[in-house]
Image (cartoon, rainbow, N blue to C red; front, side):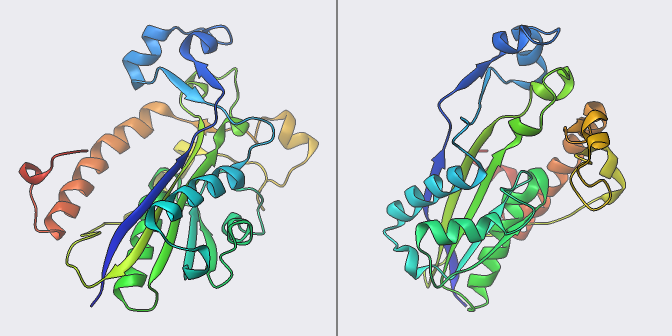
Length: 250
């Protein structure tokens, strides 16, 4: 059985920076309040000529260069995003075309904050099964375009950027050792963007009602995340035959 190794990685971060002091000019908050609750000092915001797809392409090319892999050698491209370029076609297909990965299958995955882990695991499992040899996994977001800049609970959190991994088959033991994937749909209404889908298609009414902005119950999300991230981490370590004492970097 082949192993799935990460052989390349790349990032794309927009140059414009929005600091906590900048946000304090828009809503009732300050740098100390934001840093104390989130650890965030600043966030990067995409320019008008940048998008989820353009950031994804830039990160992908860097990852491929580091892996010394030609785009035509890719078998699979997965883009994880909660702010895709369009409802369809898939952002992954746009990336596939723009980088020249003519032999790769491509699709998008929407799993919010967990999406990049889901995508990496799916690519790794495809490599382990022997069905593919080379995969490109991308996480790309322009969530700033769905933020209500008058909502203190959300506008402090979200920024824009992209990251990419190249995964390749190898006979050398190691690589991606384990991953766990869980969901809890009962909390769907705690973090949502209601507008633009089949339930609430874009209309003047949905725009006026703010349905195209991110809506979040911050306390509920925090309680859930702090509980399940720890348990999922322990489960992944156990699957890999490791303990927390073996971990050097988080």
